[in-house]
Amino acid sequence: MTQVTQDGLVCALPDRSAAADVRKYQDALVIREILHTARTIAVVGLSSNVLRPSHFVGFYLQRHGYRIVPVNPNEREALGVQAYASLSDIPFHVDVVDVFRAPAFVPPIAAEAVRIGAGALWLQFGVISPEGAQIAEQGGLKVVVDRCMKVEHARHMGRMHWLGFNTGVVGSQRQSVL
Amino acid sequence: MPETTPRAFGFDTRAVHAGQRPDPYTGARAVPIFQTTSYVFEDAESAAAYFNLQEYGNTYARIMNPTVATFEERVASLEGGAGGVAFASGLAAQAAALFTMLQPGDHIVASGALYGGTVTQLKHLSRKLGLEVTFVDPDDITAWQRAVRDETKLLYGETIGNPGGNVLDIQAIADIAHASGAPLMVDNTFATPYLCRPIEFGADIVVHSATKFIGGHGTSIGGVVVESGTFNWANGRYPVVADPSPAYHGLAFYDTFGMYGYLMKLRSESLRDLGACMSPFNAFLFLLGLETLPLRMERHVANAVGVATFLQQHPTVESVRYAGLPGSKYSRLVEKYLPHGAGAVFAFDLRGGRAAGQRFIESLRLWSHLANVGDAKSLVIHPASTTHRQLSDDELVAAGIGGGTIRLSVGLETLDDLLWDLERGLAAASATRVDGVAAEVPA
Image: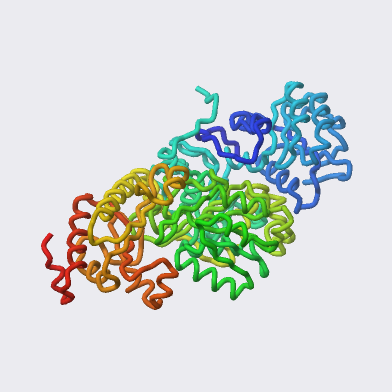
């Protein structure tokens, strides 16, 4: 829906919760690059239940112009799009693999993301798998851990400013029209 | 040239910039006042997405407003929190912070030295909403520990107490709170984020009366709640935050919004239901205040130290309760939590009781006699004859207020002028005359 390329400067956000090995996968500049360049996002664990976090995120990202590909063996379709049972079943290129699964399931998903040549592995809030992150990183993928793709999009390119959240974005250039 | 690393902007930079990037349509450099109740939707689908919280969008100004949001984000940035929600007053902010996390049967452990309005609110809330509150001596860490029980859902104190000047051992009390699976909430009004950032020491929620130093000019009533985003509301003890919400078709806020879950609930349920929203114009004035907060606090503190030192050396003064004086029993805590100063609100005790206190107040010509603190102008009040007038002498003692107790909020005037006026008042207070001519005592 919006294609925004003009950003403010990024201010480092304090975060007491994350261990150092997780924080290195929360680089704001990596996050921005992924959000700006990605077109196709495979959402692993995307539910058709509108109340699930995965549906909130998929709905939002689809609304903002990304091609969302549900990956879930228990769904035939979600968000009006055909679902695939696994990443390997997707017959086209995937830019980002966005994961809504328990941490124990992440390492094989990360390995599969490497095999299909995805550009980035993104692990949502609470999906903390240092092993999975390492597999993806060694496979040449950009990696983000314990961050929400919807929140980060809204922080850097969207309207998170409107709800009083600390976006960490500061600058004196005009905003782009949202 | 592309940036290669996020920059950690300084406090003063964020006090001026955080939360605002120039308006895309006009380029307005000042924060525009969006004096509007409502916002036109792009289309029906967008409207639905906003109301379902699937998209960040403006719906109605009781719940969100871009001018107010700029203020909220700026305070959150200065406090180092995940976000903020502004309210019509500090007490409204506090009530909403409690309303969002507590349910009947829950227990609060609170400092016994809290602001009187807070104590009254906690007592009323506990009676009407079935909560229990235990007040403890804030200086006694073991008292906090002893008061915690299975139903304890919140520990609450003030960075700097009013009017006793107690300094809270935030880290020690945060540790007690977290060991029992409860958050620590801190009222940081007297310190402001310039002097202390409680979240850095383990506090989970920070509340402010923005009316005071944040606004800084005595123009507007307002409050704000900031949350760290790091407390685990899904630890099984906060069903009102973590469980599916009937008001949003079963949406589980903490599950869905993660570190922003408490704040989303605070805004889209508590602010919506209680309705005590901040006006955009007040938010604009608070933003102006924040831009000069670092400069003003430096001067407030410097003048407070000057006034406290002067009073301490004055023969008519019995004691000065300013934590920033050398030898204060809070020196260790000030060094740790308030390295840039112990604020500018404190009490002192005059010799001569109530009558001396009244003569002192009536003789001042520059200090304003009123019930507020944190103004650019120096303020003074005599609790025994005003805010605490209904209390018996015994009750005053229990509240730490003597007949001769005077509370000061030191402003930004020329220090020598403040001392000149105080000297006049002290001379009148110690004079034996009570005929009103005391005001004519020469400087």
